[in-house]
Image (tube, rainbow, N blue to C red; front, side, top):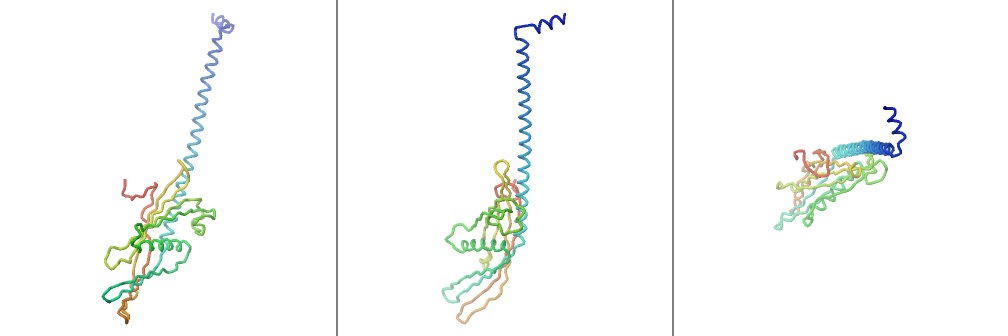
Length: 244
């Protein structure tokens, strides 16, 4: 009985067997395409995650190198204040920077001089100075002379220096220079962003305070500038460790 039905089925000219065969082939094809697309997506995701992780590590390394480089820098300047003892009680302030050693220290000093040009000009509404650098091993970009960045590959850095005068009476010439540096690399979903914050510090030493024969008092103070690390965190917006 079973053999007879199978023979009848094979001899059938109605096309039912062909239809079910094509249907089975269609289902198998759809399943194959779905599995293939899933595999391709997984491969792309793994590659993207690897690129994102590498960019994150590169930005973190750049932030640590910048932090250490800045913390190793000390700069000095002398401020001379000439104050008249007459009725007008006028004064004149002159700031002279000492030449530092090393290209990186010279670059920072140049930025601080630019900030001084703003902070001592009361007509300037904004005292901040922002500079864009490229930290790279390719020998191109602003930071090409800084050998500490030779292991990096095209890390974008935006450095903002915020000078601030002391609010204490008699210490108006004590200026600190806080820094916020935004680092980034990569594009799209693979991009990475890290922010480095450093707090500017200053120490002063009075070198001389003498009165001249024409009733003018000249005070010379030497200032030492340095930095302490504040925060390194991920993201592209400035915040503190206490922020949620």
